[in-house]
Image (tube, rainbow, N blue to C red; front, side, top):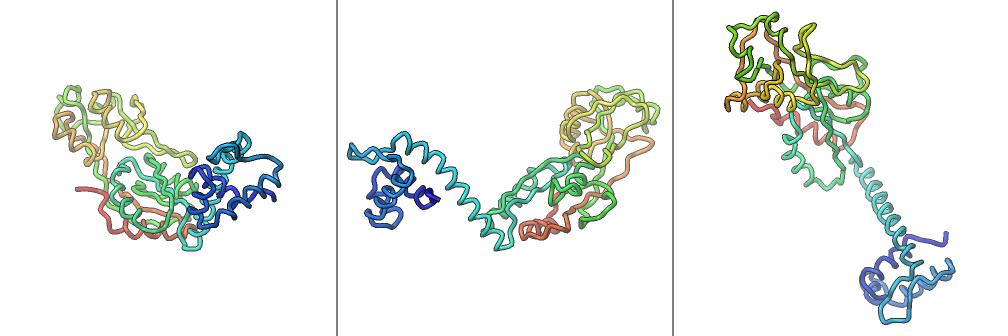
Length: 297
């Protein structure tokens, strides 16, 4: 091959530093070695790469085109080299973490700050999932780790599970909603008369889950639990919200909690990860998450 990464590195250094001598200093080589590399490349490609009429090393149009594409090759080579080194150390090149919308990705930021102090270079990707989407992402391979997966996991295995705690729900409505004025406990028949707000399950392959809906009830579907909270506050409908999520709006007088005749039970949340994934980054997150309290009181 006429074109080498070494030659591209030399061209890059000359262009950035402005002279052959400065490039030689940066690359810890003698100027004659830099000159030879350029002349050899020009000879092999049969093109002039530098305009030598002035005092400064200036690329010709052909040289500019070569360096533009060449820098992409240099970056790709650096990434490949880095990834090979990561594999040798046992760290993954990428780790995808599915975070349930009842947890919130922002709760992971302090943990991520600690992780980035590790000399591993693993790229972390966070994705948000709703209801069964947390399990769907895990079992279909879209995620390596799932945080806050609700209820029971799907059959088939392939993952390990640890309990994270219980998620408590409250039936909440806007203060001006008709259900805020009815005597408690609210019956299912009374609730059925009004639109429910539902966060749409983000599952792509598993059967979608629903929660707290009555048969025949009109439903407004929203993208996630935080949108559901906002819809409740706007008085667009009623339904159950996680107590932790609703508490601030209740304290601010934006929502009122109503007792119902058939309350929704608390559901367990889980930390789950794929058993066919044995990287050190995953192990780091699992170890930390097993002792982190992501569910505030």
